[in-house]
Length: 113
Length: 109
Image: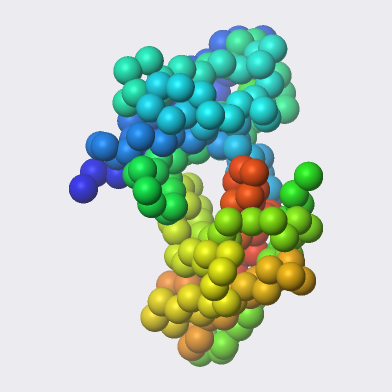
């Protein structure tokens, strides 16, 4: 089966600009996660969706970050405006209902100058 | 707030050695613990998942143990190979998923 797809793979922007990331989970996976992984650290959960509803967004910096999953399939994560400390890899993962294993995409590497 | 630490941060061993990676967590109220592998420029791959009621899980040359009461898990890799070189992360699932910072493993041929 096809894995989790993410685009773009790399993005370089200047601070205060906006950026958006896209994720297409594995077909049939109702649960979708966005993680932020800063260099040298483990991934930090930003937001979790169940179908098109938000389950957990407690660690999402809502003043600048937003995410949506309108039709319960694809998801986008947006940063507006970006700060230098947002430089990181943004990982998307999905999970099938009733199972506990998460499947990760390759990530989007963001550099904010 | 759950905190996850991993020791050592980096490890370099010659091929063929058996090795142990350690993971510690502060809150024992977890549903499960998972070990992941991350290769440079790639996402994470799940290696083993241990339910909170289990003591260990095995897959091939990998064995993971869980001592929930002491907040510890170990990942044992037998007969290491250069292809095992990667970063290994543990993650605990309680109120939410919390990852450790990882152990960067290099297996030298």
